[in-house]
Image (cartoon, rainbow, N blue to C red; front, top):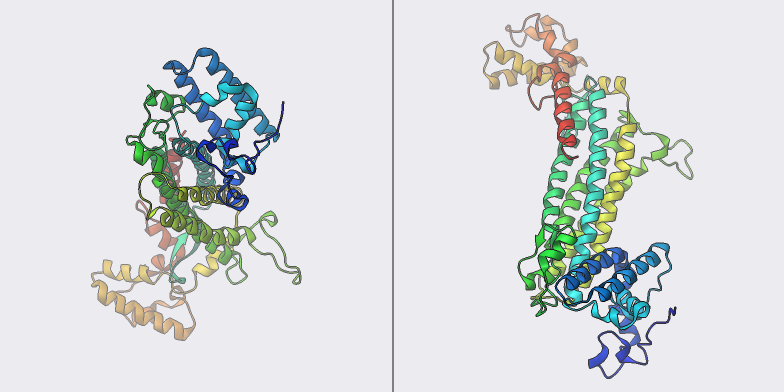
Length: 472
């Protein structure tokens, strides 16, 4: 069995499309236009699509039963070569499709040339990309589910852990750590919904659209869609071969996902700093300094934060790639794969890192509680207390502002002021005020759906876990 490839540098007709050409492709142009170095990662999807196409051709009578079996056996042998790393890839054969087709012809002879009947590389590559991306979406969905499961479990364990809640990165009101973690989960829940919505549009079969206008052969597009697990064939042949909306939509999902992971990463970086010291990350998710022996750097969240820019760039690249293309297929579309591949790889890797790391977070509860006690985080509770006493909210706001100003001068928190000191700003303040000025009282008072009260956090965890379990 020979591994020799056609010598396209001396024989232009050796190209599978070379019949019309009288001179060989320039050696630089051959390298410049080839895509096999990166599209070979779709090789098994290409074979999967070819097997379905060949089966359909045999069922409609375009291929004989014997021809189909020769092709199917040959393709399965090639798949085995690819999986073991023994396949002889050739830049001269341009792309994954031509490499596999040429190899098939080498193996089974002229029958291999019949495989391409009724299709084009245009609908072939559009099918391959959708099959490849569908598989990656399923992997990403599984990792996203694993991360959310870890988040919800951790949130439930930390339902009573009090920490400061921030606006403008200033201490605002006390919340629970569990409540904060569920905010991350809410973002990721939307990401999962977007991913599954994207999958619906990915899961359409362009196979049979051929180059741009369909084919005169009696093909059955619904059958190939069924064999490949697609929901249905695409509707319009021109759009089928030129559409890359699904790739853009996936990259938009990935950009939002990484934006959310980046926001969480920023908080992890802050919380592990000595200035906050809210959490501890296990050593396996950190690195040290080559010069400062005391350092423990949160490299995993920092790198996830950094990778967000790269995925955002892929989204812009694909939008720009498609913005000026006339119908139907153009060579520009060769540039769709590397951004899409990298966006999917990066999203998957970042999710894996987070799904491993989040369950291992250790809350430093005493530090969180001490930080929540600073910055007058129960000031809003005092205002609400006064409103319940019949004072208009704007007047209550003014009274509390004066109380805070006084406490700053005294270098005390509101809860540390005496009743007499508080009453100089309002005689409506009574002994019961200290119930609302405690951190525990503050968080417990937010006892409604979406609130930070520990009981609500636990209920929210139950609902979130039920949503996750519905996916299986």
